[in-house]
Length: 307
Ligand code: CP
Image 1 (cartoon, rainbow, N blue to C red):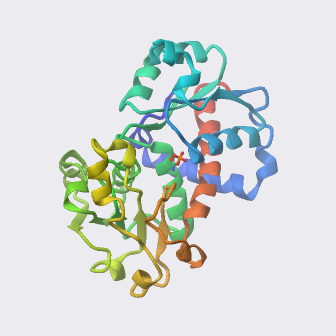
Image 2 (image 1 turned 60 degrees about the vertical axis):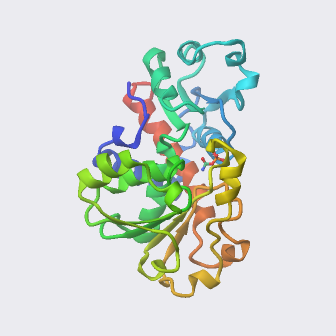
């Protein structure tokens, strides 16, 4: 049995295989419509979510399985003081696979110690969001046909944005990837990401404070929300909340085949006028999230011998 706690739990070959499975699912939905008949996915969400929880649930339903779970800690026995380990141990009596989101970094890993079924990290605090990264990788592959040689602009709250941390870890493993880190100084990528991942992998990167100075270089522009819920004070959040707003004027110098991505939800950081630009890929990215989660559920159940 294997869990998915971080993107680096998967080898590059396993990621390639999962992307190939997702693409086969997109092309041959009927072939997969009953492979999880009789199986159950539990979604344990201790933190709010729209896309991740609902795409996991839709994914399991489209594979023929069923879903159970909760969408807030207050409606679970965590509110009575039950530990994450005990919750996972109990739920693994009722479900074949668990997707867990938790505000505490490392909580899905702790859950995995006592779970009898695969645990999928659906986002843990500011740490990691590996299924968003798989979603992003599927989107990049479908848009660009490769991971190698791309220049990727990551823009916004790079300090607290767990999707950015996971994506850097994943993309650093490919060849000749260049990162352009666009953020206010106070919201830059944490030092451990620079020293342990960017520097060690030999990936090239630069840090800038405006989009305009780098727009023309980018193959991918990955916008992120300022993570209000992770700031220590509302004043700090207000200082940064509209630091970057992408609009059509800012795209004037962008490449014709730029892919604009965003894990969503957005607040103000992409103006709605950009939605109709053919370079806007964030809604198709959200749809890709369902397909890659179908591939992930199938793969983890197979690895655990449940399929
Ligand atoms: N991208 C993402 O994790 O969205 P949700 O918070 O809505 O799940």
